[in-house]
Image: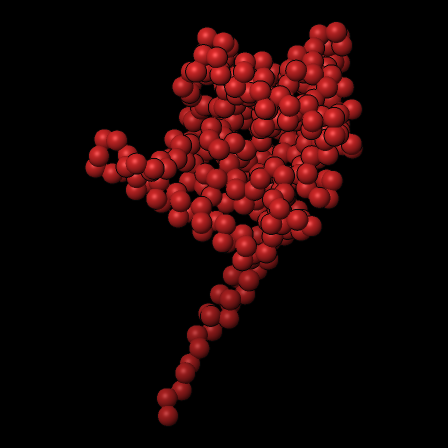
Length: 324
C-alpha cells in the first residue's frame, strides 16, 4: 500500500501564505482607500463620468408602494434593455446605407459606454427619488395645472416649450439627471473652483470652493449661484438665487425663485456618488434622490467632445400650428 508523504515544507508554506493574507487584510483595514488629491490637497473628482441608468426619476406605476425591485425584476429589465441594444447594433451594422423602416438605431452614447442605460442602479431602488417615500416629486396642484396648460400649447410658440427643449439648460439639479443620451460629464478642478461640463446641451457649471459667500440675491439666473465646501472627502454644493424660469425635467415641473438645492458628491475608486435635495415653495415638501453612481471613463485622455449644435430655438427654428 502506497504511503503519501507530505513534504515538511508544505505546512511552512501554508503558514507563510496565511500570514501574508492576514497582513494584507490588516493593511487594508488600517489603510482604507483614500481619494486621490489635487496639487492643492483637495479630493480629486476630475475625469469624464457617465450616469446612464434604466432607473427612472419617479417611480413607475408597476412598482407603486415598493421602494425596491426584486433581483428577478431587475434582471428582467436589464435583459430587455440588452436585447434592445443588440437589435439597435444590428440595425446600425446593416448593409443598407439607410436603416430599415422602423429601426431603432439608438444613440451614439450607447456605442461609447458599455453599460449605457442597460443597468438599474445598484441598490435596485425603483426610482431615483427616495423621499417622499412614494418616489414622486411632490409638486403643488397649482404647479401641475400650470405645467399641463403650458404643455397643451407647446405647438403654439417657443414660449410654451420647456427650456430643455429650447436647448437653453437642463437646470439644477436637472442637469445631473440621466437622459436618453449624452450622459457624459467632465469635471475639472482648479484652486478654488470645480467646473462641471455636461455633454447634454454642453453647458459648463462653475462652482466656487474658496469659501466665498453667495453672490448678491438680485443676480438671479436659471441655474442659480452654486457655492461648494468640502466636508472631508465629500463636496457639498449649495445652489440658490434662481430666477424661476427654469423647468425641472420633462415635460417639466415649474420652479420658483425660492428654490434651493443641496448636492453631495464623493469619489470612491472609479465611481462618483451624487445625491441631491430640493426645496421650493412650489413643492408640498422637500424631495431628494438617493445616492447615484457615476462611472469613470478609463481613458485618461477622455473628454466631453463638442456635440451636434444645440442652439436656443425661437420662432425662426420651430414649427407652430400657424407655420406648420
